[in-house]
Length: 231
Image (cartoon, rainbow, N blue to C red; front, side):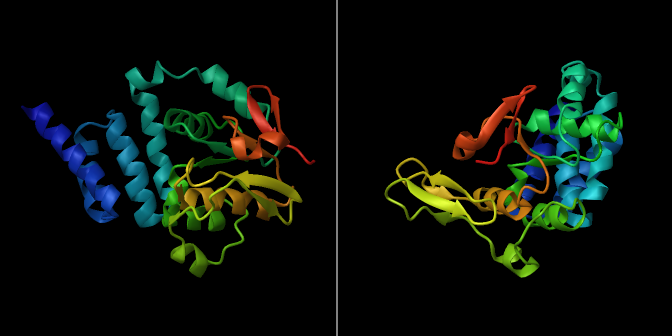
């Protein structure tokens, strides 16, 4: 009964996150964390809600809590993530789609001090405004949008009926946007990914843990990840 009640509270916390009610979510996750600091769902909820309320730097300490979660730590191949990060270029920007890979890579940085120069970006969190602002201000990720433009970003329906070429003017590369029959919505995350890559203008290595189809013509696979290469 007690476990069911906790699960219901966690679900309510995530409902608050989905609705953008970060203060209520943060209160729920903090209360559960005080009694159960090993719950992975609670730690994730704290990371997002604390980041939204206080900034990314205040969210990261909760990542270290994953290290004392025996069940979670046993699923992490620390050697894999250590080698992965070690093989990337100086000050690289790494895009990660998978939640476990994202948190495990951050754990290597925050707990084991591995390659803290790398900016690790969750593509799913790129849909949230607080995360975008912190990437720009705290993590020194190149974003050319102004703060006002970031606040006004929103998902929109894909207007293209056919595959459409889009040139990233600074990078001098062309990508193909999928037609609306294949991709109905152009998300904030989609827009930010293109903006960061173009604003970077080859200044830092851009890496993807999984192959990004939009950039497939410009990606070179090496050491288990993909690096954006000049045409």
